[in-house]
Length: 323
Picture 1 (cartoon, rainbow, N blue to C red):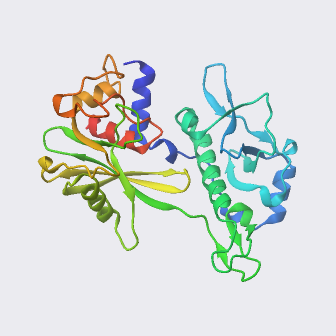
Picture 2: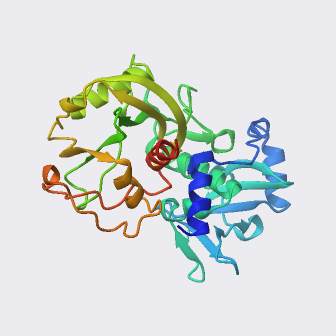
Picture 3: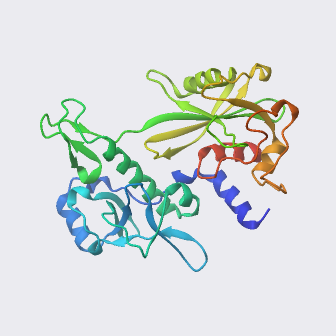
């Protein structure tokens, strides 16, 4: 394994990729239009977002990817189009919609660049996309249907008719690595996924349900397994469009009860630590091709690769392997 791969694994074990952040959200400024306008006029840094949530990026001489932030004097955006993200190291940061694309820039999405960004830039773009996705989907008052107005520097929407205030939505979802006592984990795959693609199980938390309750329910519904020793590991925002992924490890009661539901999970199987290590390039020679044991000679084949490191699914797997 290369030094870069080792460093990536060690970094992933420390903190989920999209949970990294170093900027101060400085919420005290969100209701101070004079301060916000002065900050914009004096030269803030602006993160531009296209309609597809891509953003300009650049690569430095060492091959590192960073956001190509624009000086506010070069950005055409009305005050209600600007989202105040916060401050860091004496600089003020905003996000704004890209009204046109500069062909001299390279544009990329968070999924492809997330693991390459600094902690500061990862925190800025994750917040910016989460807010932009919310604004795009919540343009009208849920009480009376009146078009709402952007308030508090992009962090709320207010109905001009009934004066109700609406806040960004975050949907809680659980994601869990289920293991047995023999060094195996259960991974599942959906019918729409490519051959060899598997991941840990996940699902949304229902009203009136605890996180641990959601873990147990989702696993039983999807693959028929009952759990014990449900342990929280970490959480990560997932702004596609508005989830907070809460990660767990859990131990199965009876591994022989595995029975995928055939709807949400087309196929599920137990995989060994060696299979996971090879698929994740933990010292393996070929992550792209692992022969499937006889009991897995079904659509989807063997385990070809693990989820990318931008996902908390990978952190759950890597942490379990490291332990």
